[in-house]
Amino acid sequence: MLPSIESIKQQRLKINLTQKQLGIEVGVSTSMINQIESGRSQPSYETAKKIFEVLTNKENQSAYTAGQLCSQSIVSIKPSNTLHDAIKKMHKSFISQIPVFDGKKPIGVISESGIVAHYENGNIEIAKKIKVETIMEPIPPIIDYKTPANTLGPLIKYSKCILVSKNSKVYGIITASDTLKMME
Image (cartoon, rainbow, N blue to C red; front, side):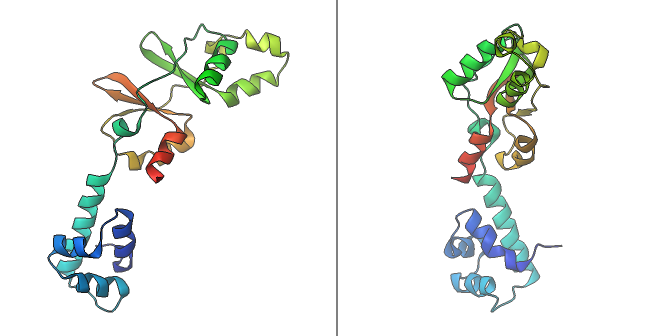
């Protein structure tokens, strides 16, 4: 079953393809694409199928991968560091979360919201001395660098960040602000 014919224009615009370019790829005239998009003409099943195949292929070609979107400069912290250390690193790097690494292995994440929650529970000077490992959140999701970036929305919605791996090693990090780059 094919998607709705009414969605052709939206899909075409989403991937910045002109009517002329789509017509050439499908093997029909620009005028035919215009008539289909405006509802003045109904394409045959074969033409509609070809249009959606072209749109899908072009969308997959134009999509970023996680490896292209991620920052390869990862600011990290050790589990034995204090919250004060984490706060200083966050401020210095203008970030709101830091993955926690034990050597080269990611074991958790510390975030502004997690730190604030511990400040609310008592004395700030005592809270600053708390070890990161005692309040870190679970390890963020780790995805392959070839993962299409357009699939990351649900992950970043529920995670502080996403780690990107390449050849079984952490390669980069994706944060919510990185996903905004896709929208540009």
